[in-house]
Length: 258
Image (tube, rainbow, N blue to C red; front, side):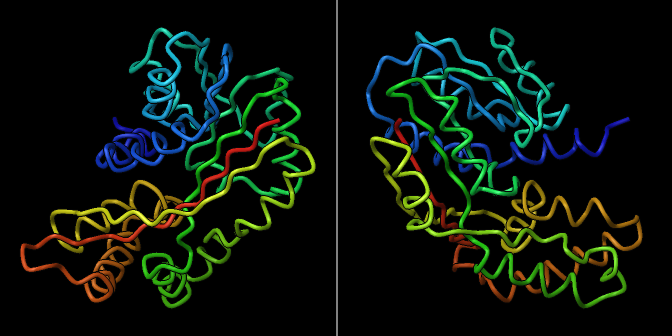
């Protein structure tokens, strides 16, 4: 039998090329230093770890994720590397690391005011913390999730599920600059062409933002919720003449060098 987490791992990689492009852009901005030890925190199914290893072919690379299924997928994909099931918020490895990569994961972890400085302390001198996070809570896809969650028989189950914590570039810069020699912060809006109209947009978010919502719903509520979401998505993201939906996706990047 396929587990729910196993389904999520498969769902995530449906759009692997689109999801991997930002981590490649992030790694390209890491200062060119002698990186001997690197770790991918929130490695998912290993696509970001693969990009990390390709960028640093001589480094000792490892990965961690809170999902056992994601770690299993990463181990299968990259058996030459060490992967462990670990919660980032309680990760206590002292380091030092020359590079800590966090690709599209820290948006799920609370208390950034404590977390980011803690990660910096695990860096070697001259090492970098490289972070990429979706910055799309104001986009229709997330706004509609919040509205639908509050308007239906599932409302009591879904109260508080939507992630709401977010900070801007200036906040992260101000937090990290006193601790680091260099802090580089930028924001990029990707426009992903998705074939399949509103259904493709829904499939995209099934692998990310929809996950905590669907996990709370039963077999009757889930299809009803998804149908309402699909209908609203079709109105918010009209297809182009060729049927393609161009999905805007803003992301925030931080490279902090100790």
